[in-house]
Image (tube, rainbow, N blue to C red; front, top):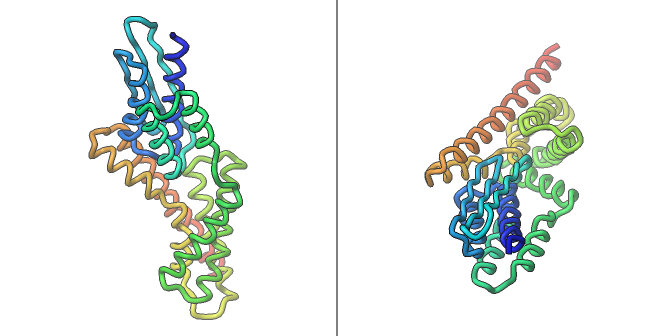
Length: 256
């Protein structure tokens, strides 16, 4: 019997971890995990989720307490994963699927649906699309493709050197600010450096983290909400710092 309770707790933790790593709101994670835990019919089902950790407890007079803690080190925006986990948890609680089937489905969701090439391609077209949206000239749109490659290079460095979000944002935007002015020296008019840099910043901007931080705070999850807002602000500062340093270096060299 204890093994069955432990399996329920492990499935609940797996669902919560996937949602946390996908930038879901804390209240949504706690609701989903608690729904899964309640299928055990235990007297006590507790879950606490914040930005960097997940804590789950299952207890009943007939068993020894089961507590599982998961440290969350990597986060990214994966709304599709959140949607799938929500659906699986609802199907499980309604009895439409078994616990084992839910575990298998969650493990499939946990595996990224997109390859690194797909991710890089999405970043490239996102940057170019923003250059079009902001009213850039044909040269702005063309050069924004090169800016997108610099952003992709920043992501590659993050994986290669295990850099945190602060360093990734600073390094990526430093490359943008220091290299783009030199590229535009060989580009005919009209062109706009501001449009190119702003377009390249869009994939790096922590919009989801900031929005979810506000939503968690309004829901009363102050620890998680403030942590997400702080994370978003740190990344935003790193983006501004990197661009400022890059432009300072490039302007200094060009003024010689």
